[in-house]
Amino acid sequence: MSAAQVTRLRHGLDVVRTLPAPVPRVFRALSEPEELALWWGPPDYPVAWCTVDFRPGGVWHYLLRGVRTGEEFWARAVYGEITPPTALTYLETSSDATGAVTEARPAANVRIELLPAGEADATELVIRIRHQSTLDRDRAIGFGIESGLGRALDTLEALLRRDLHQKEHQ
Image 1 (tube, rainbow, N blue to C red):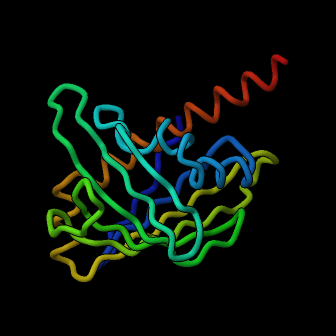
Image 2: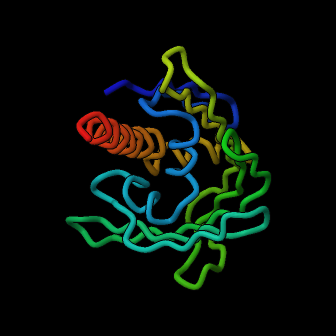
């Protein structure tokens, strides 16, 4: 598996990772609820439930649940710009089960870009996460955003490699 390159910035993080699939396939993994449920969240906190209204102004509401602990983390994202299949933005906040915004974790503006990588069927995934302050960035890091996102991207990469392997053996 390739490791993500993570750069800490004053108010956020930039995460860059090359994935073994073409841009449209990676975009599908970011935009369809059944796809997101397969990889979003670290393996020990997988998606237990989610809905996706994938359009500008639409809401992605999801629950991550600890496999061993049962601990739950609700979140919601309101989509901004969506440019299939290369970019999307959203504002992510913590929420409760009804989708009401909570202050449990700091809000983040997220921009995701998908670029063709050097290899014919590879994609460079660029995630730009921005918080209101360095304190909010540090709180998010304390909640495990770097390691959790890295492990979620490991799962996504494994899913894409499995798809590629199945395609090659058909």
